[in-house]
Image 1 (cartoon, rainbow, N blue to C red):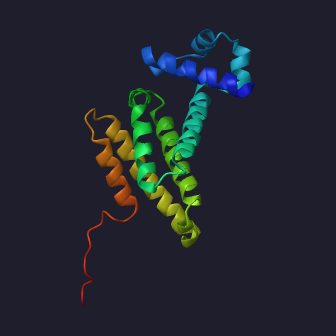
Image 2 (cartoon, helix red, strand yellow):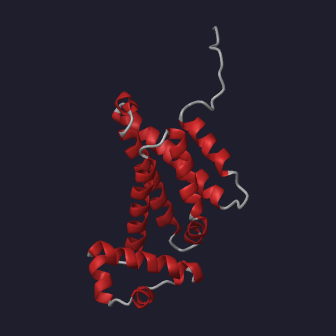
Image 3 (cartoon, rainbow, N blue to C red):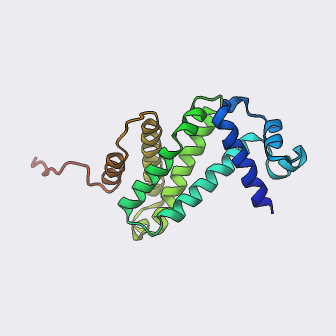
Amino acid sequence: MPGITKKRIAEAYLALADHKPVDKITVKDLVEECGITRQTFYYHFRDLPEVLEWMVAQFTRALLDKTLDQSPQAAMRILVGEVTAQASLLDKLMHSRRREDIERLFLGAVRSYLMMVMRQSPVLGEFSVDDLGTTLTFYSWGIAGLLIESCQRPNADLDALADQLWRLVSGQMLPKHTPCND
């Protein structure tokens, strides 16, 4: 039942984050919210950052499950929708003392997600190892940055953002040009 307890702890973290600054959430708060002992908490997690890491990993896996059978355009819409649905939490985390950790986790989640999606695509075999790493890094930073920025704009057009991201990733956004004749 370790997964169930981990899930309860994560849900308690989210519940506390709804009404308390994330920097003020303590292990004591979580164990009281869950009705567990400190020993039980530490059996499942080393510390509070590990709770966040676990939550991000679960979110990434669930997102992949939702998008695997979708077209790339639909998958991008789901990605944008799921991330922006967590805008309030993301904003609180980005304004906490753990901002660097959150950025690293979020960037890693986007990178993992893109890699998992690419593994399902025949395109993966067309990349050299170096090119794949550079491509994943470039798109991970770009997508993560745009998602974080869009979460800070309450009136962001999420369908337009998803469409733009898809066109950018697929190379359709770049203007067509004719080669120069030197």
